Length: 212
Image 1 (tube, helix red, strand yellow):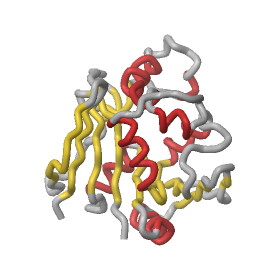
Image 2 (tube, one colour):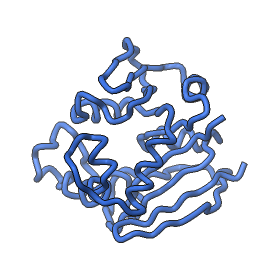
Image 3 (cartoon, helix red, strand yellow):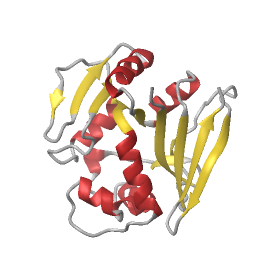
């Protein structure tokens, strides 16, 4: 049986997205400057060779430790679980061949028929809670891992329910001051220990294990 994990990029002051992030204003660079801040947070990812190849952004890219982690995260994932807001935002900007290449379970109040995309990604829409979604995901993932893909509220629910085995936070050297916090209202019963740390030119990767 695989593990349940999440993998998030975070600012040094604890935010995974800047204030005012709104995909409807993605083409307005002055709208609270959220897109500029988002690129400062996530810019290291777009430099990686595997990321560029997976999204068909062209040849080239870096091949060091950062690239290895991006590729490893992709390859270990058998199913992703995400919230409805993440899906709604990504739907507007993912290419036709969505970058998951696995089943994706979307937690939502609105049930739709499965949405199949080229390249092996199928979105399934579920409304029967996080535990049911995880049970179904584990069945489909088989020996691969289940990734909790966000957003922050979904991650917090799974953490507080004791359903996460480990997680990685990629700390980008930026401060937001405000935004969407990753660890809001986490129960003090959630105990973690550091599994490993990798430092690169752009970001510090820290993987934590949950103490069961």
